[in-house]
Length: 395
Image 1 (cartoon, rainbow, N blue to C red):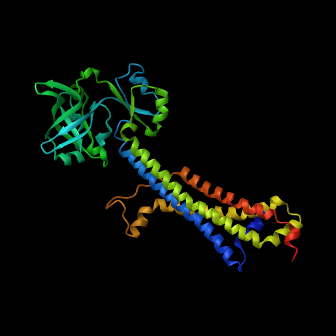
Image 2 (cartoon, rainbow, N blue to C red):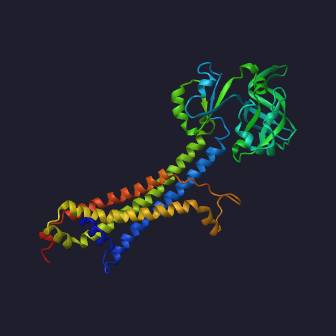
Image 3 (cartoon, rainbow, N blue to C red):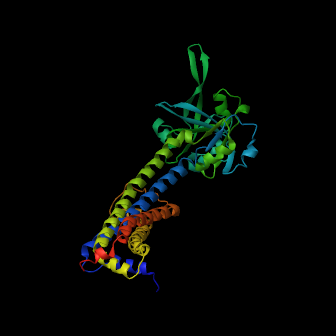
């Protein structure tokens, strides 16, 4: 098979001579370092992507992505439904509330919904049915964590107090309150179970001191909650509230942790790239006479540079390829691998979520190859600067 002369010589230098064991060892370690760095970076990135996707599905899958307050007359609900990324719209009324049982108090977000509209939490109900939230019945649905904390069961009565609305009484000003009956318990496996309460939109409006006809806020669910920035630029509404108000800090923390982990693991690849520099400098020092002979035979400086760039780059490409393959395999089978060693990070019955993003894998591989090529430039230009007369003076 035809090979350019520079690549052919670079391959010969990469394999090295049997007597040059130390040089081959350093070259092998640089290749192994790149492979380990790529393996670790792909695996950790895939696990972090999995956690982010799990949070996105469990938390943002049940919370409204956008709330447009006061039922804007322009644009209308029909026109909002035609906006990009908008999957569903429905009326809603939200307020902060305190819930009191016979055994304790808890606080959370009270959502008033239309039971006839699509409700994502319906698929997470352990007991009860969304249709039980009829107007005027003052029925309430709570999460399993809240029910356990307050020792509540189906049919129990609880007192719900709204802090944003108050009434004057002979003993002073007190929050608006009403007895509700527990008509459903849901479970999402997140902190939503201890903070969210559902009731009929008319009942929440009355408790908040609003006429039911004026409870016309709109909630939006998007096909991608992270597309919220693009949508807000299009809408440009002053009365806009989105999921970042309730869960923005959580996802920002996950993103920052993922970036920091990627930065730290990238240092492994950078150290391996420095090993390539060391290995090539050793080769250049050893091969000075051979480089001088090649130059006297007519080889140009750019060809000499290409020889050592090919040698270092091939080492980086080999390490990136091996690390990429092992990283993808390790990501897919990480739970099975941990089970073999008896490691369980999340507890019995729970597995690490994994999402292998091809774009992230391609970025990691490109970074490894790019650093490998950049690491070859200094030794390559150093080799090209060899003067044949000086190198061969004592040969």
